[in-house]
Image (cartoon, helix red, strand yellow):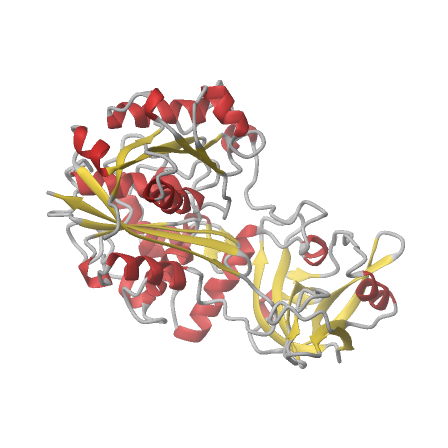
Amino acid sequence: MRIIENSFGIPVITPETKAFWDAVNHEKLLFACCQACGKSHAYPRRICPFCLSQNVVWKVSSGDGKLYAFSLYRKGRPPYVSAWVMLKENVALLTNIIDCDTEKLKIGMNVGVKFVKVGSEQRVPVFVPK
Amino acid sequence: MTIPVFVVGAFEHPTRLATDKSVAELHAEVAIGALSDAGVSKNEIDGYFCASDAPGIGPLSMIEYMGLNVRYADSTDIGGSSPIAHVGHAVTAIREGKCNVALITSAGRPRSEGAAPGNLAELPEYPEAGFEVPFRAALAPSYAMCAQRHMYQYGTTSEQLASIKVAASIHAKYNSNALLPKEVSVAQVLSSPLISDPLHRLDCCVMTDGGGALIIAREEIARSLTRPLVKIRGVGEAVGFSRGSDIDLTVSAVARSGRNAFDEASVKPRDIKYLSTYDSFTITVLIAIEDLGFCEKGDGGRFVADGNLISGVGRLPFNTDGGGLCNNHPAHRGGVTKVIEAVRQLRGEAHRAVQVQNCDLAIANGLGGMLDRRHGAATAILERLA
């Protein structure tokens, strides 16, 4: 099945995640990294889910990664591909794959971020095969 | 020595479609059924346990609706496995002298209401909502991606997953209340429409109205009643989650809830005669069987094939009521029915075609929520005393 752009929801933006979404609007993908324990995490929190340190900083991702897991959800209206993408920086994101032939998707294949507009102002990061 | 605590009453609502009942009424009806099964009167209940499928704020509305005079109430919600967690919480409360007779109810009518399951990130204040709602991170793909990883890492096949549904359907034939009482074949599972690849429609549980209730009591009370004695030998619970950089979609929180329950019970997986386990999807069963220690991680596909889960045929009879896959998954929550069928097996009250011989030790295991991220697991090991 050919999946092109899809109807994504508008994200809920909180004081904790505003910087992430602002960066997305500038076509930059951030991830959260703890300065105390050195571990990165997703979805991003201001408090590290490994050590509870509040010394968490934003880092800029290359936007490149590998497809970790995916599923074509055929009951979606329209159908869509749910996916976990493992970024080069070793953080896995729950996301969607678009601009793809679902038959050609494979675990481990290279994917890259694409920033897609939802509503009039906000973008969301999804991934496309590379 | 720990104070023994018993399941003295268990009741599953016979309805699978409750268009003319309220949710509160269903909770109360299953309570009446469990009290009658136990031979306990309403006035003896001094503890009440429910999860968010009960209408109202925590336990308050249902306590008022039923007019319960309780001195202990708990509305822990860890998803569909909550009633099994409640069994553990009731044991603790009873041991601590906080109550003597605990009522647990779970019920709902999503089928009548046309309510789809698992939109867990719908509320904007949920911290994960911003990162799930845009991507419509639905329930079926959550489990489907775990199935895909299991296939990728361990060579598990769709045929092996289908054999879980086949075993459940063979059991459901003997349950006159089952929503899907017909035996199906592996080929029928594989030819049913794909819902979320690689899961087919027949890899998914049913959606039903209804519910169930349990009565948990201290030993003197259990021994004063006429029902067979079902002792709660060990309980465990755990919560699984994702934080991005330590992801493994093939292991669930059951690995920890199960270990806790086995440790407390001082028994081994090989001692278990019957397994009730959460079956929202076939993959839920396969991962739980591995995580409970019935086989090594990755061997689940081979373990469930060849009729191994069929009562009278295989080495680990499971969900002999037909489970959530064929019988009942009331309120999108299969926790309570898992305990109920385990109690039936231990009492020797399962249908004789599926009754496990000399069934003296059973597990009721729950695994609800999103398998690839936050999910709740609860495990109870139950023993029939002579």
